[in-house]
Length: 553
Image 1 (tube, rainbow, N blue to C red):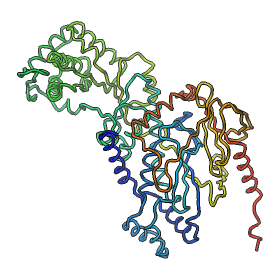
Image 2 (image 1 turned 180 degrees about the vertical axis):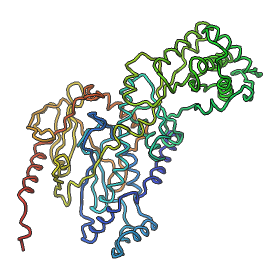
Image 3 (image 1 turned 45 degrees about the vertical axis):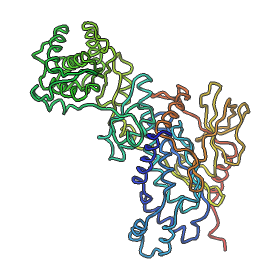
């Protein structure tokens, strides 16, 4: 592990500890824990599982994210004396004092977790985490684990959809910090949109904590803060690798006249303040010149100013980067900008202008990005903020954390809404692949059942109402969950953001195109083994018969 990666992982761990202390949970977790403790049930072995009920954004898949944060939270789970004293002040006054002594000693040393690897494609109703341990402890973990997984997986999935809309060639930059739901929402979004397929972030702290490439140059406020060339200082620039200063303002003025001449533009329409802003920035960062060019008029001023400054930089052996468009018809404007770049390259024999990039930013949504991708355009990088980090199409993934077993006995929640019923017992989850290597269906079965085998047919029941028995023969079989946390210790290497990102891209590539469609995707099948289906039926029938416990002695 290199030093930079180690620094990122250490920073990430400290970030999780600051953001997610054990008190970041709902009060009723403590009241339930107390009731378990009073009944001497707090150490009973119990199993919970975390899953979501519906695939987000009208799609057929999600990406699982937040696992590394969960593991760091579990490893460091402990209440401070101050935490316990606070709980003493808010719990009912008749709470037994010995319970607070119990809380002071509490940790996750008896907790174990199996999980789907972070960055994996996952589907509705498939258990992502299985958490086992003492009943009171694993109950206390519920809200914190949901908080760590819900938004991370949602925004990661949203990013994956933006990546599918953009296609593989165009680079994507996350720039939603200022629009995010608070500092933690912004930081979480930067990490998990990168895992979901974005290439860059504007968030400097995310770059430091997670090793994500950062980018950014200037805002409109920088441009509009200038009004005159007299504000440019210094006014000279040393050629790249050379000696002696060049009067950069004079050089740029000369290039501006030549650019206006070949393009038939009027120098009188060029905004002096905009030119001054570009000059000042180019002198400060001659190797990183990428201004926003629509503060006034792209065609009459911004583009002309850029070309003049960029040509001057090229003459001094610097390489300008490109431009950013932030308003209007991005596709049409990008075509015009590219035409001008090519004309300058041809007329002035400056091949560097052939490699200039065009960045587009303007309240980009998934729909507008998909439409942009269908039109002719020359946009190389798209910056996305509000619609990405706030997940405007769906504000929550709706993950739940449900009890499935106590003292080795299966537990099942039944509801008047059948969709809210849960699946009982400890389980194993397998992904069945077709002959082309595409995921065909996910199989949920009881943990004691033998694993399915490639080439061997099996019978199963599709999850849902009124689904009949079917037979399937998988070409390949993979086990979805791994043991990641055992008796208080992390047993699976924590993935960096880049490692989880790579897994996400590989996982998405394996998915059949019909399941990746942004509009009207084909539903993915999740099935139950015969034994699990029978267990669900037996428990449901037993519950419907009622009980005569009130009549027993």
